[in-house]
Length: 181
Length: 250
Length: 164
Image (cartoon, helix red, strand yellow):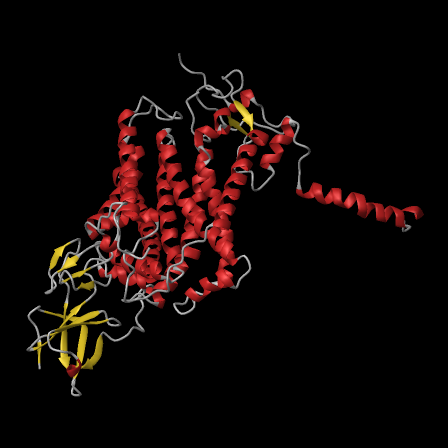
């Protein structure tokens, strides 16, 4: 059927003293309008309330933590002697653990591959299913791969935090690390 | 005619006492009490700070157990870090001779100094954690899929810039951790393709000294926050443009 | 006749287009060049020309201060001074992995790095750990007033020794 060309003017004629006008015609059906009963709620108060609750809880937790625990401050910088062991904050201990095997592979190659790999995920994953659902069963491989990535990170951080002692040697938690603290 | 020009004290007083406050309020808040749909809408889109939100959202968006607010908490922590960081700048001098003393002053000689520093440090730790958890949430709910692919990429850049902000931040106290973290971090850079050139430009020289401290300071308080703020803006804008928070297809 | 006219018009058209292209190329080229130059200048700006750093050539104690067969750690200069029966050898204490300061372990008779666990033998060779290169042996000479002078930027062979 040859489609009859519809002009905007046919639907909403201009200049009849209206304050509105048709901007554009698009293909397809209105997604929201076709849903009955309505699937949407007003941001006020339905979204603003949880946002305010989140803000309150986070702020209170942070204030309490800051009242009872002091931020770490080590001795003044001594350019000739590193502390033993010299440990970065927990979120860099995975990197430090990797670096302790090889500076280039652990410090440059793997971090760059991690970042590029993460960025590439949406372009590598061609499965359109499972949006908006936690742990959708329609994408088992993607979920497994990412979980492995998360676990590797956590394991490296745990090794660096709890199992490394002086001279970056492995110490089990029950072993005496020989240090003062 | 005569009446109109005559100064009426009672009328003037009542104007300032009752009408001006109302006029002032109306000139700032341009919507009525939000019990009608019109006012609920106006409340959102006539407010600069709320207009990043749509007037209406899909129902699943308001369920805390979908997103666990991780992105929102990250943004909140970033704002808290900006405020506490800005305050800490009043007492911090990026000098190898003074920096450590400033830390001690914050702890012992400045009212609420230690509290602000704690907020800043623990907030930073929290932000690294929430940004990572936010990434996990987005992955496990498949929220990076079209049309949100590029927003995921921006998210990864934001993760990296958060890590750089943390790294440059804990160098500033010029304690043992700071010094050896700069030493190690800058040497890692020398393993990258251009070798010692990268280490040189990071440190502003060959040794870890004043030049290195000021570089990390400028990166921490200006360059990285600027980039991060911009990218957060783009990130949130794209969330709106891509149809709000991801959810199951209609 | 008409044909030639057409041809003339065409070539004029081409000429016009190519002139327009030329300006477009010149415009874009100029813009991109100036942007590249700005970025280049900004990058160059980040490389300081004058450094206020301590000299790599340092003067240490008198040669007579070191007992024969001793290993002395000079903390401020981060180097170990070996005094054997024939002379002096100086090895850098900077780990070749990520520049931490290595410690001399009396018990194990070796150098150990506290940061990432590299271990070096007495002659600087890597025994274990992530260090990619042996510790550096540094050039050492005696000054006229019989003091050791070490050049931290001058790496020498491990057999190099200052004979006194």
